[in-house]
Amino acid sequence: MSGTGARPGGAGGPARRGWPDGAPERLYVVGAAEGPPAERAPLDLVTLVVTRPGAKPGAHPEHGAILRLCAGPLSIAELSAYLSLPASTVTVLVAELVEDGRVEARAPMSATAHPVALLEAVMDGLSKI
Amino acid sequence: MGSPRSDLGERTGPRAGDELSPSTVAAVKVVVVGGFGVGKTTLVGAVSEIRPLTTEETMTQASVGVDDIAGVEGKTRTTVAMDFGRISLNDELVLYLFGTPGQERFWFLWKGLFEGALGAVVLIDTRRLEVSFDVLGRLEDRGVPFIVAVNCFPDAPPHPLEAIREALDLEPSVPIVECDARSRASSRDTLLVLMRYLYDLTAATQER
Ligand SMILES: Nc1nc2c(ncn2[C@@H]2O[C@H](COP(=O)(O)OP(=O)(O)O)[C@@H](O)[C@H]2O)c(=O)[nH]1
Ligand SMILES: [Mg+2]
Image 1 (cartoon, rainbow over the protein chains, first blue to last red):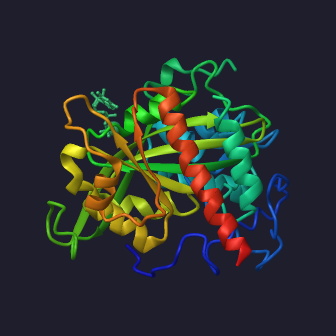
Image 2: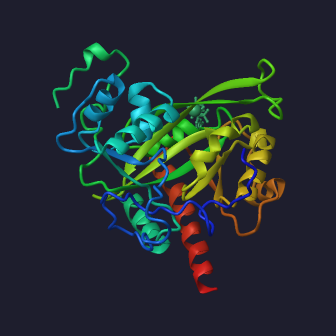
């Protein structure tokens, strides 16, 4: 409970700036260039993780397990569930793999990005289920 | 993918068909919050394309000010499980739905959970309205947009929605709907009410 009183997505909030290493930034993203480029979007429960082609498993078995699971995109929440590890632990492991360039992390979208198009896409998708 | 699963015990992976489409580039999330037994897991399971999964979160913090948590003085460790499900909205976008308990002692979960969330569905059981009071206040304080869904249990006496609105002291603009969390259509419609509300809020902001 930080008590900062910051409104999620409010001005000066944790704007998604995308990853500096070229993760996809199409789809509803606007204003991704704002802010210091070195600042990475924080990893979120719904950040999607994908193993980069040719990534070496390395010595750490948990890293290896993540690399294997993320042959296709998978959220940190799903990784946490499948690995039976707390999401905070998975977040640390994924951050290490991002740092190494062994995985790509696709930052989540929030309604502050491009709300109308995003919400339309959500409503459209939901109405089809 | 031929990955060796048997030697990993609990460490499985997505069941066949539970993989996300490789073209998925981004996720959004919605939180379903309410007291125990109110139907959060049921709602998530009703709309999810995968069997609901569970993620645990652990927090270690000084126990000062967390008198709700039993523990030794000093550091307290708490583990809470959250159920979640998933809906692929199109080839590129996926929605995750998290069910989280509303009691104050679990609010430590909320930081990472509500940041970036589109909004929340507060699920209530009219037999235990008071458990949602704290949640509603907290969401309002944090500026998280939410709707209220009344999960209709058969043995609950019927209440008009406007009476519930009054009892909960909801803003007139906050949608309140009835929901059968066991029904996919009803749960989907509840999510659509949230999205429509968010859409209207956004439109109102942009006109300013
Ligand atoms: N009659 C009825 N029962 C429900 C409904 N939603 C959930 N339940 C039941 O209530 C119990 C608790 O639901 P659950 O989803 O586990 O609650 P949670 O603790 O909020 O996750 C389960 O036995 C459900 O089958 C509903 O809409 N109507
Ligand atoms: Mg539950």
